[in-house]
Image (cartoon, rainbow, N blue to C red; front, side, top):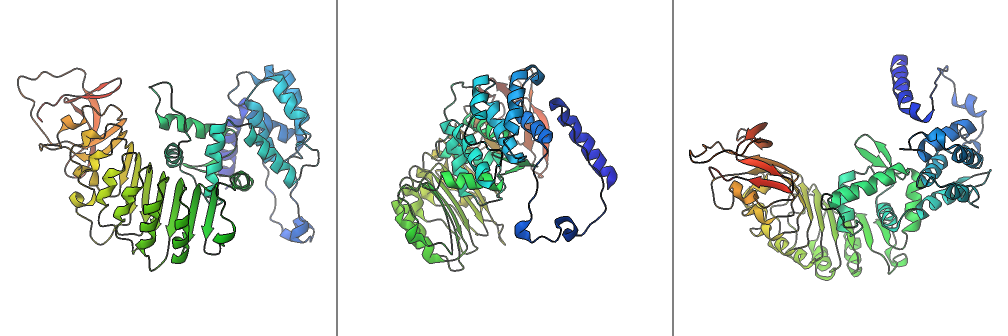
Length: 473
């Protein structure tokens, strides 16, 4: 174990070298908890903060992040030293204030932070919370919207960056890019990276998490727009008229029926765990909720179909269905949701897989604004005329074949495609066709189930997207 610790410390010190920070550790013998606390009761035990120089190093690492030659900013470093004296050694406060300072290297900005009433030498829980609120106030409006929405998720929730960005896009939080080289997903990813840099999220492997106090901040600023409802929640006494985002997790079907009164929601997360699900409540919701842009259904094993009334959600942009439900097919009215941009269907694997040609509506290619789709099974190969989905950015496991509506020529005008994984049968190039050089590597799947990378002479890239030669198809 010591060798593992030493390797970890060496690795971390290399990363901290750029901010003149160094980590030390030492082994201590095992001791009893009462020996540490001196027999104090849990209510009287208090963890001390960082030493002032440690706190300063942490603040500087965030304040001068991505700044070349931070030692050149001597005046700013002096101000940082004065700020640290008011942080009571709080590492969270140091990280957050560092993010606020990083937004501008102007001395007036740093002095304004130093002289702010929110800093106090005796910084307690309330004082740290004031600092967190300040960091939120320094965010531009579009980032404030993105952050506040995250309160809809439970404390300690592990965020997937791509999934969260898709939700932000569906809810209209992402500004349209001015440069056509950037996608909405690119812009949303930058938003998220800024929030990470300012310590609103901490990274854990491939996922991200909010500190408990950060999550508490998000709840406090979104209390009029976001609400989580569970079995113990008293609905009648807490629902504001400004409510826009609702998360429901319940085993009580009566709660599902009551939420039908909220007609102006923009997002609904429905974790229905009732053993006797009644889709009549869903039908009522779908008939009256015309403003809904995001719908996430996590259902039990009894849900086998989504009501046709979902076609009334004409502004829906994001649809996700998962859980232990055993869906037989998606409703035909889904093809009428012309604004739909994201559809993720990860229903549980049942004893028998639905026929891939029956699961999706026959007019699924009407969803011309669809940017992303993900299914547990290869239902995508059933889409005839997939070329009409011109906004699609990823196409995975689509089986090309010599049948009208499924030939490679369908992909010719899908200029927004960023990645393509297609099943391509073997073919012979006609003698009168000449290859366009150089060939481009594309990913394709053979019919034995393996995935390979090969040079296909029938495909070439253009700057704006893909261009295709239809030789042999």
